[in-house]
Image (cartoon, rainbow, N blue to C red; front, side, top):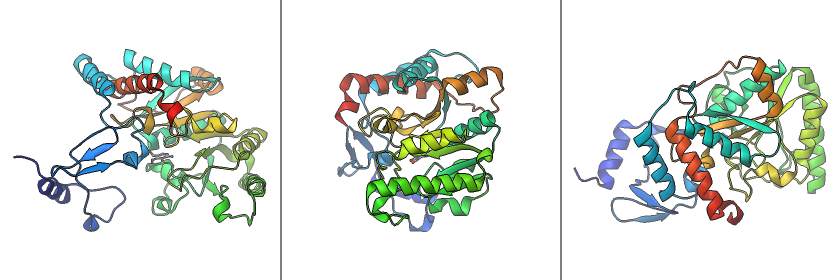
Length: 333
Ligand SMILES: Cc1ncc(COP(=O)(O)O)c(C=O)c1O
């Protein structure tokens, strides 16, 4: 049967259950193919993909080099258990570590962004022996057990089944929660508020502060210049780990490999997904600092996934990062 917009829409409405939706209200756009920043349907309508799907196709659709790498890996080995050593996995991890700042040594691969946050939270709890995770109200961290409760936005509320999460207000001068009138005041008051939340939640109980350096879904909120430095200082003062969720802002979207590079700070764990391979094959992960990496040389890591470092995803990461490097994509963002 020749596909048409009508057929694809009918199949979708009859059989597909969509994310974050009241199913009866949906009328999805039909997409048949794409190239670069363009997408098209079966009736010859063309669209410019200004949203990069869910803010993830950082190198555009159907980059030939990435498609070729996926095909080549598919011919060689389409799946491999996480316990084995595999060339594509090692090459992908090496490239990611090379793009991270000094002081990071290994990568734990996941299937996407939410489970990357989930595992970063697990590492922080295991490393510190503490339980609580602090995160911002204006944030989104994904839709799994802890990631959705770490999320600050209202999608958290119907999903609050994980324990040990508390939230704070992050700076946002346009709708200041601190009655601030300029950026410096917003920064100081937001940091004072975070200090109070830490004190009131019990510093000795807090494993990590989880933060998007530039909150994305909440509205692309660039923080005041010194805010992240202030958060790093508070984390250090109280022995709390700092996790930066770079799922949306990372891998070139802000003109650096990681958004936090703009602010002169470095976290203990970096969470990534989306742009690392433009979503050609689902993938995410956690870049682990030297100290935490060394800790898990001696201590068991109680976490794992059947598809951790899936070869098709890994091959697509290698080709994506090489293409981005050679084409100067980050510099041009
Ligand atoms: C900052 C951030 N973290 C985590 C996620 C969750 O990623 P995923 O949907 O791949 O699980 C998203 C998704 O939009 C995100 O923007």
